[in-house]
Length: 244
Image (cartoon, rainbow, N blue to C red; front, side):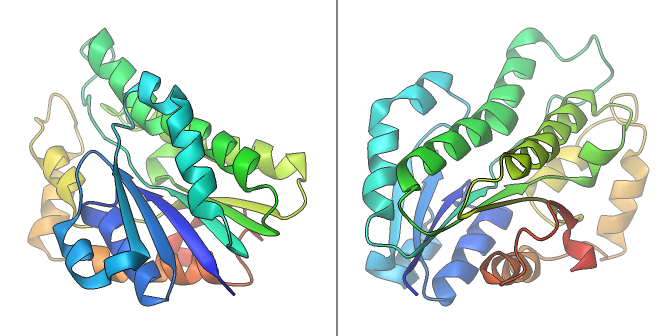
């Protein structure tokens, strides 16, 4: 089955690992990110297409050229995938310390981008009989955490978007919102770089790094790709990688 996948934030960390695992499974990948991945480009040739896109820029998301690019990429596929991976944990801190600009940037990247891409994806890929959308969510979207009001709210939005889309009952479309667990990425470095005043649970995250209990991006990326390609994808709309 000819399969193609769109992966956001593919240039590093978990996104790069998901893209690499899909490419290893003979899936063509369209990577959307501000930067390209030299590592993926060096090993995958024509199977990888990279487009420079700031997913935190609402105007760029609304550009008709993006929809045209996605439509052209999906042509000829029997199965198409959208992985909404790009996201940010900042601003970190109690309410009243985030600032309008930082909050707006986070909401655009974490929520507007995935919702716009999901809408574009369904609109242009509707002729493809097997369409799958995966939001990379977080356990933080399923409970509140001090200092993470913006991050928790944006990840909760992805979970509820997936629930609502599933309720739409669109033929051929499956969707899931998945919490990947705690992975050793740049986001974890951002968390550890905060202060206890900003994020009271910081010592817990420092300890996970020191104790070597963080999952590797490669391990998580492979498990996510396998789940995305499995027959059971979408059976559970809200999922956690640690339970798969």
